[in-house]
Amino acid sequence: MTAEGSDFLQLDIGDAPPGRRSDWLASRLRHAISDGRLPVGSRLPATRALAADLQVSRGVVTEAYQRLVEDGHVAGRGRAGTVVVAAPARTKEQTAPGPPSAGTIFQPAPGIGVFDSLRSTPAKIDLSPGVPDLTAFPRTAWLRAERTVLNDLSAAAFGYGDPRGAPALRLAIAHWIARTRGITADADDVLIVAGVAQGLGLLAQVLCDNGIAEIAVEDPSSLGARQHLHDRRLATPPIRVDDEGIDVDELVRSGAPAVLLTPAHQFPTGVVLGGERRRELMRWAADGGLIIEDDYDAEHRYDRPPVPALRSMLAEQVCYAGSVSKWLAPALRVGWMLVPPRYRDEVVAAKRFADLGNAVLPQLVLAHLMESGEMERQLRFVRKRHRRRRDAMIDALRAHLPGAVVHGAAAGLHLTITFDAEFSDLDFAAAALEQGVKVQPLSWHCQRPMKPGLVLGYGASPATDIAEGIATLGRLRP
Image 1 (spheres, rainbow, N blue to C red):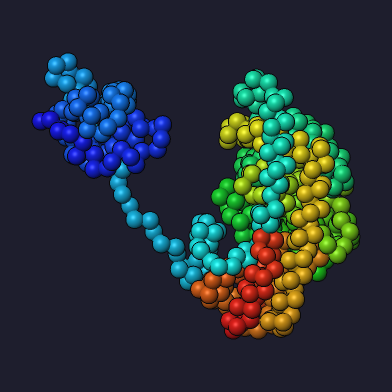
Image 2 (cartoon, one colour):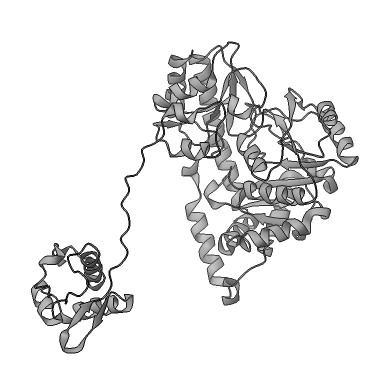
């Protein structure tokens, strides 16, 4: 059987991108073989004939045939011509599933993929917490730093790196947290991880290996963080949070050997761990308790001075974690941990076997930006923009939800609102999503019953969207 002419290709080669006609032709031939227009055993047209039919040079056809030979789909048989000997595997076509319904997402017991589902669901206005202004990413400065780094980079630097992270970034992080968080650390104390989420998973793995079966958490606290701990088979006993932060007396009574905290800006309530509570917590840690300090958005503060990191007060008992997700972009997946010496080697080993270390080039670019002062300039810029958006959200809440109690306005990238009423915040969030406004229900982040509420992010949305989104919530208020 012989394929005559170019009819079996079904397209004119004029559709091919300039300079890539051989690629285009090879692709069309593969499709023809795959769908049976050129069955196994059939003979391709002679190169001269097909070239004339398509009005291209014979070299274009010859190169396309050669690629099919290299793929094993055709073979030259001398005078018998070029024969199809194998069909490429066909990719099963699947209809992309539609976005999940709002009622499916907002369940009392959210599954492990709930944040993926919420992120993938389209909405006109996204007030999800935890995301900065992504339009403010310093593209020009990043590209300039990348060129500088590449110009100075040796060939050896493109090989496998230190699983702990690039020494330049570890040193830059040590300098950064000394300037911004009052933490004294050496580069050797710093471990670079793929965001705080990975760092928490690695630490949980090591703690499990050392016989720790539970890590106490604030209540309310981040659902995502709890999910990471549960993935490592760790229990997360809840400890009450009030206006002064975590209840240390309840933590002591729980008997938990470790606790995960957000002391600079508690998630999601926004309270700051008070001075007396800090002293109580330090006494608990000095007796052997381990503190995991998630310093997730301490850089964003508006109406109060910075509070010291717990790590600056008791380094031997505090595992400190931070990242660039809240002031550059989550997509960079760059975070850091300072692990107490008794667990450090094991966490480094876990990182090594997880991925051999983060990608080196972004680390070097980030180190350059940190050491050059560019990151301080970027942080000052986005802090002003985030403050304006926070103010816009507060104004809109006063206008459209005057009965809501606002929590955590002095810092961060989100507000939490609660209501003195009996209704389901899950249903409220679902109704908002159906009207094109994406929010998170407070109950997602609670292990014990609490007042209904919403967690509202303002960092990633312009003021006009914030005002419109809050107005929509006002109309939907149960």
